[in-house]
Image 1 (cartoon, rainbow, N blue to C red):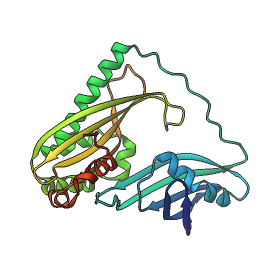
Image 2 (image 1 turned 120 degrees about the horizontal axis):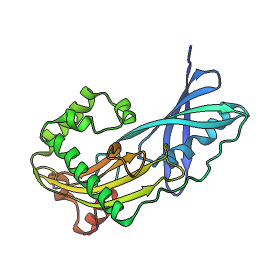
Image 3 (image 1 turned 135 degrees about the vertical axis):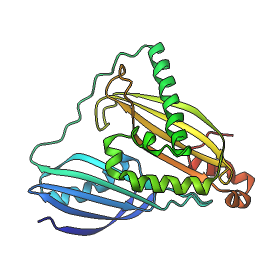
Image 4 (image 1 turned 90 degrees about the horizontal axis):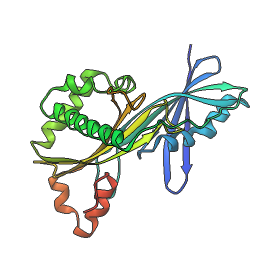
Length: 259
């Protein structure tokens, strides 16, 4: 039987994070750590944040990181507060030292990169537009298995549907930047990662910015899947209270392009 333990975690870095860490024993020398934080963290930040606790849990053995998943909810206010961030990391306590060998990069020509980015731009528009049109199953099927594990279809559909009702009709959208990561060393799986940054405007949310991260196992694949999605918004009532000199900084917080 697994047991759940609770630790209080105080993290100090270039920013100050205060959150809670719980963990449970899955099997002998295998644990699941759950970090809950008020601010969204990058995966590397979250893994670094729990490392000292993972070492203590392993009692002298080395914590080897396995699968992870996360969920981030980020309503944006002028002071930059976020609502919640939950990160779940599986570890195995081992006498071996975890190594991260460098991965070979795929050979991708300039023309191939252009074609891949064109494909991902079209898929990003389709992914977001399908949700706006109520074709939630189409959008959900574009998500990776790891994303689907975070939220089942009905829960995900309700959250997306509620947001559409809140935001109102689409006015315009632009996928303005595509960034390719060619088989990065610290990624969960070997492959090609593409970050698609976009900005939208809705009746009730004049500023809505975010990005969709896509993954394929190799550059010749057409089967890109969504492995991460984050977005922030500025509603009409919040826009009225934002001073013009603060708008650019708030836009930056939610991933908008510079004005």
